[in-house]
Length: 339
View 1 (cartoon, helix red, strand yellow):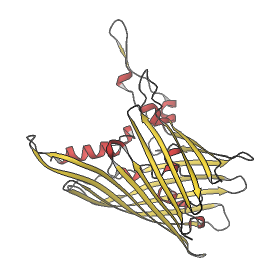
View 2 (tube, one colour; view 1 turned 45 degrees about the vertical axis):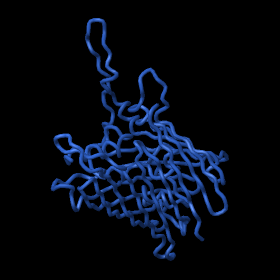
View 3 (tube, helix red, strand yellow; view 1 turned 135 degrees about the horizontal axis):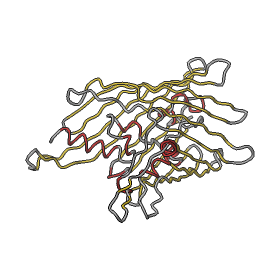
View 4 (cartoon, one colour; view 1 turned 90 degrees about the horizontal axis):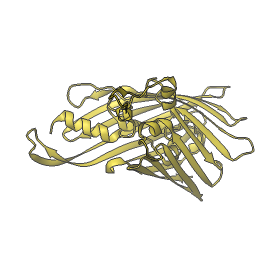
Protein backbone atom coordinates (compact mmCIF):
# COMPACT_ATOMS: atom_id res chain seq x y z
CA UNK A 1 0.00 0.00 0.00
CA UNK A 2 1.24 3.49 -0.82
CA UNK A 3 3.04 4.90 2.23
CA UNK A 4 1.74 8.45 1.94
CA UNK A 5 -1.85 7.22 1.71
CA UNK A 6 -1.41 5.00 4.76
CA UNK A 7 0.12 7.71 6.88
CA UNK A 8 -2.58 10.15 5.83
CA UNK A 9 -5.36 7.79 6.94
CA UNK A 10 -3.71 7.07 10.27
CA UNK A 11 -3.15 10.76 10.91
CA UNK A 12 -6.74 11.66 10.10
CA UNK A 13 -8.11 8.99 12.42
CA UNK A 14 -5.87 9.91 15.30
CA UNK A 15 -6.47 13.62 14.98
CA UNK A 16 -10.03 13.88 13.71
CA UNK A 17 -11.08 15.86 16.76
CA UNK A 18 -8.24 18.35 16.50
CA UNK A 19 -9.03 19.86 13.09
CA UNK A 20 -6.34 22.23 11.78
CA UNK A 21 -3.75 21.20 14.39
CA UNK A 22 -3.60 17.70 12.91
CA UNK A 23 -1.43 16.77 9.95
CA UNK A 24 1.51 18.97 10.95
CA UNK A 25 3.49 16.36 12.88
CA UNK A 26 3.76 12.68 13.71
CA UNK A 27 2.85 10.75 16.90
CA UNK A 28 -0.35 12.78 17.26
CA UNK A 29 -1.70 10.27 19.80
CA UNK A 30 0.55 11.87 22.43
CA UNK A 31 -1.82 14.85 22.71
CA UNK A 32 -5.07 12.90 23.00
CA UNK A 33 -7.09 13.31 26.20
CA UNK A 34 -5.77 10.62 28.52
CA UNK A 35 -8.43 10.05 31.22
CA UNK A 36 -12.14 10.59 32.03
CA UNK A 37 -11.51 13.47 34.39
CA UNK A 38 -9.60 15.42 31.80
CA UNK A 39 -12.16 14.59 29.11
CA UNK A 40 -15.11 15.69 31.25
CA UNK A 41 -13.51 19.07 31.95
CA UNK A 42 -13.11 19.85 28.26
CA UNK A 43 -9.76 18.21 27.57
CA UNK A 44 -6.10 19.01 28.30
CA UNK A 45 -6.68 20.10 31.91
CA UNK A 46 -3.21 20.41 33.47
CA UNK A 47 -3.92 22.06 36.83
CA UNK A 48 -4.92 19.11 39.03
CA UNK A 49 -2.47 18.53 41.89
CA UNK A 50 -3.73 15.59 43.93
CA UNK A 51 -3.84 11.78 44.24
CA UNK A 52 -4.34 10.88 40.57
CA UNK A 53 -1.05 9.74 38.93
CA UNK A 54 -2.49 9.97 35.42
CA UNK A 55 -2.16 13.76 35.66
CA UNK A 56 1.60 13.32 35.56
CA UNK A 57 1.44 12.09 31.97
CA UNK A 58 0.19 15.47 30.75
CA UNK A 59 1.90 17.74 33.29
CA UNK A 60 4.96 16.34 35.08
CA UNK A 61 4.93 19.28 37.51
CA UNK A 62 1.78 17.80 39.04
CA UNK A 63 3.66 14.72 40.31
CA UNK A 64 3.45 14.86 44.12
CA UNK A 65 3.58 12.66 47.29
CA UNK A 66 -0.22 12.24 47.37
CA UNK A 67 0.19 9.95 44.32
CA UNK A 68 2.26 7.43 46.31
CA UNK A 69 1.22 3.85 45.49
CA UNK A 70 -1.69 5.00 43.33
CA UNK A 71 -2.44 3.13 40.11
CA UNK A 72 -4.61 4.63 37.37
CA UNK A 73 -5.98 2.66 34.41
CA UNK A 74 -8.00 4.40 31.67
CA UNK A 75 -9.63 3.39 28.41
CA UNK A 76 -11.46 5.20 25.62
CA UNK A 77 -13.58 3.99 22.73
CA UNK A 78 -12.61 6.76 20.37
CA UNK A 79 -13.81 7.80 16.92
CA UNK A 80 -13.94 5.31 14.05
CA UNK A 81 -13.55 2.33 16.42
CA UNK A 82 -10.09 3.47 17.42
CA UNK A 83 -9.21 2.32 20.93
CA UNK A 84 -6.63 3.85 23.20
CA UNK A 85 -5.75 3.93 26.88
CA UNK A 86 -3.30 4.97 29.55
CA UNK A 87 -1.79 3.47 32.68
CA UNK A 88 0.16 5.40 35.33
CA UNK A 89 1.75 4.61 38.68
CA UNK A 90 3.65 6.72 41.22
CA UNK A 91 5.90 5.69 44.10
CA UNK A 92 7.31 7.77 46.95
CA UNK A 93 10.92 6.60 47.10
CA UNK A 94 11.97 8.65 50.12
CA UNK A 95 11.70 12.21 51.42
CA UNK A 96 14.86 13.22 49.58
CA UNK A 97 14.22 11.60 46.18
CA UNK A 98 10.46 12.13 46.50
CA UNK A 99 8.09 10.68 43.89
CA UNK A 100 9.01 8.59 40.86
CA UNK A 101 6.36 8.33 38.16
CA UNK A 102 5.86 5.99 35.23
CA UNK A 103 3.13 5.62 32.63
CA UNK A 104 2.14 4.07 29.33
CA UNK A 105 -0.01 5.51 26.54
CA UNK A 106 -1.13 3.26 23.72
CA UNK A 107 -3.45 3.47 20.71
CA UNK A 108 -4.76 0.77 18.38
CA UNK A 109 -6.10 1.94 15.01
CA UNK A 110 -7.74 -1.40 14.21
CA UNK A 111 -7.60 -3.35 10.95
CA UNK A 112 -7.56 -1.99 7.40
CA UNK A 113 -8.04 -3.54 3.98
CA UNK A 114 -4.90 -3.13 1.90
CA UNK A 115 -4.78 -2.29 -1.82
CA UNK A 116 -1.91 -1.82 -4.25
CA UNK A 117 -1.44 1.04 -6.72
CA UNK A 118 -3.77 -0.61 -9.25
CA UNK A 119 -6.56 -1.01 -6.68
CA UNK A 120 -6.12 -4.76 -6.26
CA UNK A 121 -6.84 -6.11 -2.78
CA UNK A 122 -3.85 -7.21 -0.72
CA UNK A 123 -3.58 -8.39 2.87
CA UNK A 124 -5.28 -6.67 5.77
CA UNK A 125 -3.04 -4.74 8.12
CA UNK A 126 -3.19 -2.90 11.41
CA UNK A 127 -1.53 0.04 13.12
CA UNK A 128 -0.66 1.00 16.64
CA UNK A 129 1.53 3.28 18.72
CA UNK A 130 2.80 3.25 22.30
CA UNK A 131 4.76 5.61 24.55
CA UNK A 132 6.54 4.75 27.80
CA UNK A 133 6.93 7.71 30.17
CA UNK A 134 9.30 8.17 33.14
CA UNK A 135 8.74 11.31 35.22
CA UNK A 136 9.83 13.19 38.32
CA UNK A 137 9.02 16.53 39.98
CA UNK A 138 10.64 18.61 42.71
CA UNK A 139 9.55 21.52 44.82
CA UNK A 140 11.80 24.55 44.61
CA UNK A 141 12.95 24.96 48.21
CA UNK A 142 11.14 27.62 50.26
CA UNK A 143 8.75 28.44 47.41
CA UNK A 144 5.34 27.36 46.11
CA UNK A 145 6.78 26.40 42.73
CA UNK A 146 7.13 22.83 41.46
CA UNK A 147 9.20 21.73 38.47
CA UNK A 148 8.70 18.42 36.66
CA UNK A 149 9.89 16.50 33.62
CA UNK A 150 8.85 13.41 31.67
CA UNK A 151 11.04 11.43 29.30
CA UNK A 152 9.03 9.46 26.72
CA UNK A 153 10.13 6.60 24.50
CA UNK A 154 7.77 6.29 21.52
CA UNK A 155 7.22 3.34 19.22
CA UNK A 156 4.92 3.41 16.18
CA UNK A 157 4.01 0.75 13.63
CA UNK A 158 1.70 1.50 10.69
CA UNK A 159 1.40 -1.46 8.31
CA UNK A 160 4.99 -2.36 7.26
CA UNK A 161 6.39 1.00 8.40
CA UNK A 162 7.74 1.61 11.87
CA UNK A 163 9.29 4.49 13.73
CA UNK A 164 10.93 5.18 17.08
CA UNK A 165 11.31 8.51 18.85
CA UNK A 166 12.02 10.23 22.15
CA UNK A 167 10.37 13.26 23.71
CA UNK A 168 10.54 15.42 26.79
CA UNK A 169 7.74 17.17 28.71
CA UNK A 170 8.61 20.11 30.96
CA UNK A 171 6.22 21.67 33.45
CA UNK A 172 6.14 24.33 36.14
CA UNK A 173 3.29 24.73 38.62
CA UNK A 174 2.53 27.29 41.30
CA UNK A 175 0.45 25.90 44.18
CA UNK A 176 -0.92 28.44 46.67
CA UNK A 177 -2.61 26.35 49.35
CA UNK A 178 -4.19 29.28 51.21
CA UNK A 179 -6.38 30.03 48.18
CA UNK A 180 -6.35 26.46 46.78
CA UNK A 181 -5.02 28.05 43.60
CA UNK A 182 -3.01 26.26 40.92
CA UNK A 183 -1.26 28.01 38.02
CA UNK A 184 0.80 26.05 35.52
CA UNK A 185 2.62 26.03 32.18
CA UNK A 186 3.60 22.89 30.28
CA UNK A 187 5.71 22.32 27.18
CA UNK A 188 4.94 18.89 25.75
CA UNK A 189 6.61 16.58 23.23
CA UNK A 190 9.95 18.31 22.84
CA UNK A 191 11.90 15.71 20.90
CA UNK A 192 12.65 13.95 17.65
CA UNK A 193 12.30 10.76 15.68
CA UNK A 194 15.30 8.47 16.13
CA UNK A 195 14.09 6.18 13.35
CA UNK A 196 11.72 7.70 10.74
CA UNK A 197 9.09 5.73 8.84
CA UNK A 198 10.93 6.10 5.55
CA UNK A 199 14.01 8.36 5.54
CA UNK A 200 12.07 11.62 6.08
CA UNK A 201 12.21 12.91 9.66
CA UNK A 202 8.94 14.46 10.82
CA UNK A 203 8.44 16.89 13.74
CA UNK A 204 6.75 15.82 16.95
CA UNK A 205 3.46 17.45 18.04
CA UNK A 206 4.92 20.08 20.36
CA UNK A 207 2.30 21.90 22.41
CA UNK A 208 2.42 24.69 24.98
CA UNK A 209 -0.44 24.68 27.50
CA UNK A 210 -1.25 27.25 30.20
CA UNK A 211 -3.79 26.66 32.94
CA UNK A 212 -5.28 27.97 36.18
CA UNK A 213 -7.80 26.44 38.57
CA UNK A 214 -9.20 27.17 42.02
CA UNK A 215 -11.72 25.81 44.51
CA UNK A 216 -14.21 28.49 45.51
CA UNK A 217 -14.32 29.46 49.17
CA UNK A 218 -17.30 27.93 51.03
CA UNK A 219 -18.67 26.54 47.75
CA UNK A 220 -17.91 22.93 46.65
CA UNK A 221 -16.90 23.92 43.12
CA UNK A 222 -13.51 23.94 41.47
CA UNK A 223 -13.20 25.89 38.22
CA UNK A 224 -10.61 25.27 35.50
CA UNK A 225 -9.45 27.54 32.70
CA UNK A 226 -6.99 26.28 30.09
CA UNK A 227 -5.25 27.85 27.10
CA UNK A 228 -4.18 25.13 24.67
CA UNK A 229 -1.83 25.24 21.67
CA UNK A 230 -0.26 28.52 22.72
CA UNK A 231 2.75 27.79 20.49
CA UNK A 232 0.58 28.82 17.53
CA UNK A 233 -1.70 31.84 17.75
CA UNK A 234 -3.76 31.50 14.57
CA UNK A 235 -5.94 28.42 15.03
CA UNK A 236 -9.10 29.77 13.42
CA UNK A 237 -9.78 29.37 9.71
CA UNK A 238 -12.48 30.39 7.26
CA UNK A 239 -14.90 27.53 6.71
CA UNK A 240 -15.98 27.43 3.02
CA UNK A 241 -19.25 25.76 4.06
CA UNK A 242 -20.20 29.05 5.72
CA UNK A 243 -19.76 31.20 2.61
CA UNK A 244 -22.75 33.41 1.82
CA UNK A 245 -24.02 34.10 -1.71
CA UNK A 246 -26.10 37.14 -2.58
CA UNK A 247 -28.69 37.46 -5.36
CA UNK A 248 -26.04 38.66 -7.81
CA UNK A 249 -23.92 35.57 -7.33
CA UNK A 250 -21.23 37.24 -5.24
CA UNK A 251 -19.68 35.12 -2.50
CA UNK A 252 -18.76 36.48 0.93
CA UNK A 253 -16.34 34.33 2.91
CA UNK A 254 -16.36 33.96 6.66
CA UNK A 255 -14.31 36.68 8.38
CA UNK A 256 -11.76 35.68 11.01
CA UNK A 257 -10.77 38.24 13.64
CA UNK A 258 -8.70 38.48 16.82
CA UNK A 259 -11.43 37.06 19.04
CA UNK A 260 -11.94 34.06 16.76
CA UNK A 261 -8.30 33.13 17.26
CA UNK A 262 -8.40 33.86 21.00
CA UNK A 263 -11.49 31.73 21.69
CA UNK A 264 -10.02 28.75 19.82
CA UNK A 265 -7.42 28.39 22.58
CA UNK A 266 -9.88 28.31 25.49
CA UNK A 267 -11.20 25.37 27.50
CA UNK A 268 -13.35 25.81 30.62
CA UNK A 269 -14.51 23.25 33.15
CA UNK A 270 -15.99 22.88 36.63
CA UNK A 271 -15.99 20.10 39.23
CA UNK A 272 -18.87 19.84 41.68
CA UNK A 273 -17.93 18.41 45.10
CA UNK A 274 -14.25 18.01 44.09
CA UNK A 275 -13.13 16.75 47.51
CA UNK A 276 -15.95 14.27 48.14
CA UNK A 277 -16.38 10.59 47.29
CA UNK A 278 -18.77 11.51 44.50
CA UNK A 279 -18.28 14.41 42.11
CA UNK A 280 -19.69 15.69 38.83
CA UNK A 281 -17.61 17.29 36.08
CA UNK A 282 -18.63 19.55 33.20
CA UNK A 283 -16.55 21.08 30.43
CA UNK A 284 -16.68 23.10 27.24
CA UNK A 285 -13.99 23.15 24.55
CA UNK A 286 -14.48 26.32 22.48
CA UNK A 287 -12.29 25.27 19.55
CA UNK A 288 -13.98 21.90 19.22
CA UNK A 289 -17.40 23.57 19.47
CA UNK A 290 -16.68 26.04 16.70
CA UNK A 291 -14.79 23.82 14.28
CA UNK A 292 -17.31 20.97 14.51
CA UNK A 293 -20.41 23.15 14.59
CA UNK A 294 -23.01 22.31 11.97
CA UNK A 295 -24.93 25.21 10.47
CA UNK A 296 -28.61 25.40 11.35
CA UNK A 297 -28.39 22.32 13.56
CA UNK A 298 -27.87 21.98 17.29
CA UNK A 299 -25.12 19.36 17.71
CA UNK A 300 -23.81 20.26 21.19
CA UNK A 301 -20.23 19.95 19.90
CA UNK A 302 -17.62 20.86 22.48
CA UNK A 303 -19.66 19.81 25.51
CA UNK A 304 -18.46 17.09 27.85
CA UNK A 305 -19.58 15.69 31.19
CA UNK A 306 -18.68 12.96 33.62
CA UNK A 307 -18.62 11.75 37.19
CA UNK A 308 -16.53 9.72 39.61
CA UNK A 309 -17.42 7.67 42.66
CA UNK A 310 -15.10 6.34 45.34
CA UNK A 311 -15.65 2.85 46.77
CA UNK A 312 -13.18 2.19 49.58
CA UNK A 313 -9.79 2.06 47.78
CA UNK A 314 -11.28 2.21 44.29
CA UNK A 315 -12.43 5.26 42.37
CA UNK A 316 -14.49 4.73 39.22
CA UNK A 317 -14.80 7.46 36.58
CA UNK A 318 -16.80 7.88 33.42
CA UNK A 319 -17.04 10.74 30.91
CA UNK A 320 -18.84 11.48 27.67
CA UNK A 321 -17.53 13.99 25.13
CA UNK A 322 -19.57 15.29 22.21
CA UNK A 323 -17.80 16.07 18.92
CA UNK A 324 -20.75 16.40 16.56
CA UNK A 325 -24.19 14.93 15.90
CA UNK A 326 -22.45 11.92 14.33
CA UNK A 327 -19.47 11.44 16.64
CA UNK A 328 -18.85 11.15 20.37
CA UNK A 329 -16.53 9.28 22.73
CA UNK A 330 -16.81 7.55 26.08
CA UNK A 331 -13.98 7.41 28.60
CA UNK A 332 -13.61 4.92 31.46
CA UNK A 333 -11.17 5.12 34.36
CA UNK A 334 -10.19 3.21 37.47
CA UNK A 335 -7.95 4.50 40.27
CA UNK A 336 -6.64 1.95 42.78
CA UNK A 337 -5.03 2.80 46.11
CA UNK A 338 -2.39 0.08 46.57
CA UNK A 339 -1.35 1.11 50.08
